[in-house]
Image (cartoon, rainbow, N blue to C red; front, side):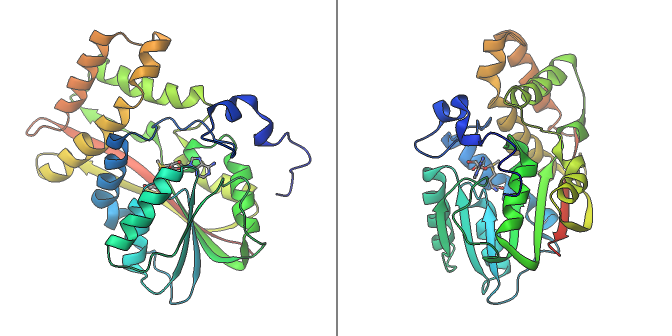
Length: 293
Ligand SMILES: C[S@@+](CC[C@H](N)C(=O)[O-])C[C@H]1O[C@@H](n2cnc3c(N)ncnc32)[C@H](O)[C@@H]1O
């Protein structure tokens, strides 16, 4: 990394080491690795597949690094859309990596290479990849700028990076109640407690430029569900949003941001926004494409 000498390494942070799975410095990941969360990641990628992957295809033989692959929810889509590209996927979680590999195998595509590694210190040579793909990961990092610089290091000159991130500040729904807004804010606060930015989507262009990339495209990819799109509405609210907010419950209650009764009411109200004819829900992800010149 270009400025490693100036900042203490992420591995020197005792909090990160304490929460680590083992040797690798583990950033605190707000959503955790429960079976429910793994299911949510798979359902989320299926619901958003066309919206988020539109425009992303890799030519045969292209060496593509997927950074922070989780349980392979995006890996399966990437492999299906670009079956002859050569994928390498990394994640901090050994269990997620094993699941990602199994998911790609059982989808009938070439498995590629799966490795446990930290995005901040990748075990690859400079210029090892032609393309990098990152989805829903920068929002969980202590230093997304440093991670982007490390990704740039392993990209060859002329190589490209695609980054997709959400922005929790872009979200609104109906009916909106004080309790549903409260549990949503708890989710944002729980992530902020780790020093992580759940509103990072709007920062993609400055972050990429700050890491030295030349940004070619960046823009919102929004989803809106209502009674005219009941399947999308239900998927958004009940398969993506509510299970994601639930991952913050323990922290929110422990911190005293809500009590059990408020939490239950907030979740129930949030669920109501997924029920037609009254319910509506809107959220925006951001997708950026940039090049290492
Ligand atoms: C929200 S999940 C997204 C997974 C996948 N990209 C997807 O869209 O389904 C975020 C993933 O980033 C991983 N992660 C967090 N910090 C990381 C780091 N420093 N290095 C590598 N992976 C990391 C987590 O383990 C988790 O699997």
